[in-house]
Image 1 (spheres, rainbow, N blue to C red):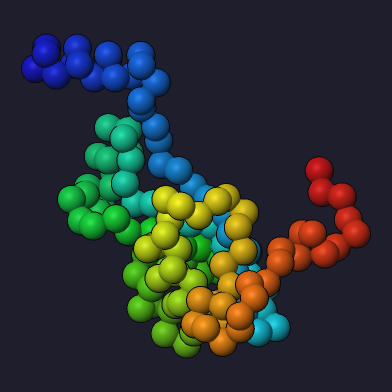
Image 2 (image 1 turned 30 degrees about the vertical axis):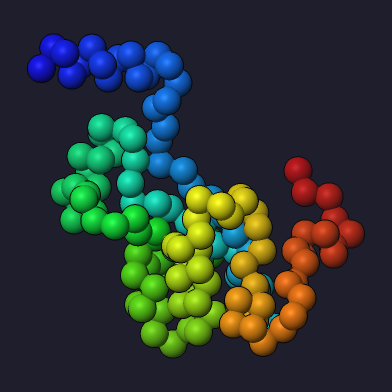
Length: 132
């Protein structure tokens, strides 16, 4: 037990330790703009893993909980977005590509499905507003 604690302390000192990495995305589809927050259901934090394991997430494949930022709906299973093609496709794409997606990136459902040949540009760059 003492050896495990010592090696954990060494890892923490080296800066390898990280908590859950939450990212936000701009989900777009035909006439649709949905700000979302993506939360991986895994962590390097012992406390977070303790809570995740007691919620049934420990040891499973990497799962992403996707939440609409208006706070009205969140799911860890893409199939739970039963009546929203936009959210189901976006969730599947984010879950499969989470590690390579950049925070704030546009997730264009029409482009993912091959319905358009050019991905949408963020509305952030199209508005004449300054966000602080």
